Amino acid sequence: MNITILRTFLAIVETGSLVRASERLNVTQSTVTARLKALEDELGQILVHRQKSGASLTSSGRKFKRSADAMLELWHQARQETSLPDGVEAVCRIGCHMDLWPQLGKPLFGALYRDRTSLALSAWPGEQVELDRWLGTGLVDAALTYNPAAHDNQTVHALAPENLILVSDRKVSPARFDPAYVYVDLGDDFGRRHAAAYADADTAKVTFGSAVWALDHILTHEGSAYLPEPLAEPHLAAGHLHRVADAPVFSRPTYLITNEAAGMDWSWLLNLLEQLGSAGMNN
Image (cartoon, rainbow, N blue to C red):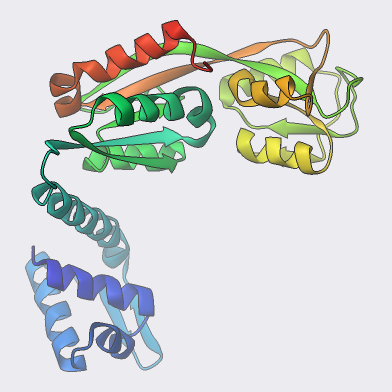
């Protein structure tokens, strides 16, 4: 697959026009048209509807765009790895769920930076769908996640679960029926247990899909919310947040998923996480 043709296809998608794509790429419109036709001929599918008003993707084009994005990302990755500076032997790419960065991602990355000086490092925050895609295409070597699902050539390593505790910006806050309560979607299992524990509670007026965003909200405005304990701990210690007495404590499992190459060549990755865990992730 020709990288230039892939870039041309994606330029058409991003600009919505063969004319604008040619301007972006600094080539003639006939060149853009020829490249697109060559790609469609190779695939045996029409990818783009050409119209006077612009260009739009066909159903085949929408499917191919996902592959084109991945192939171009892999090309950039390959260029990076084949042009490593002196003293750097390999690239270690880690994906991390945003909520796991404080207790797992940050200390792991810091230890790698300090102790594995022959590695070029990259870390990428992502939601579960993104982490799955990055692992599947090889864009990351390992991912810190809450979801144990793995595909072929991937290995799941169970890590220590995290506690989910109810915290508030007020020293005295009710464990139930707080008008400023913020619901944080911390996964299906948490949702079921939360619903059972608070079966008589009203629906929260504010909901976040990220514990990090929920934390920022209650620090900026007000409220109480269930947060991962490692995320809340610095703010509890500083007195910005307070743990709500008598509130149920939940837990959420955590995992490291490695691609086959990382699992075989980098056994130290899991060992390092275990060492960090035994030493205390917040130290």
